[in-house]
Amino acid sequence: MKPPSTSSDPHGIADVCLVLEGTYPYVQGGVSSWVHQIITEMPDLTFAIFYLGSTREQASRRRYDIPSNVVVLEEVFLFEPLPDEALAPGKISAALKGEFY
Image (cartoon, one colour):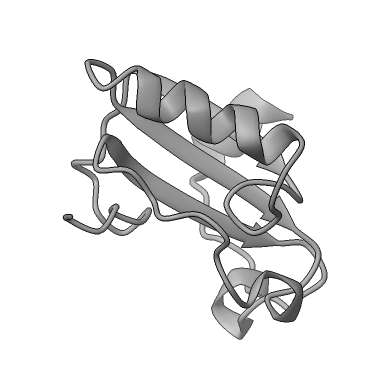
């Protein structure tokens, strides 16, 4: 099974994107069960999973094997500090600033 790409791989284009908060693939049962069933029973479609979790420690072990038709698995942990480069102000042209503001 080929591992899913991450956001650094721009070629991960999917038919369906699932935004999952605190569930699949790190929690077993409930919503995770039907998400896994949907993905595995629709092999003709490709899926991107956008996982929102609180901390990386709480998502330490996947409870499901990721099916091969999942082409992107992006994980965002809301209570982890951002890297310094993400906190630095961006450089925006004066024209763009004027358009935005």
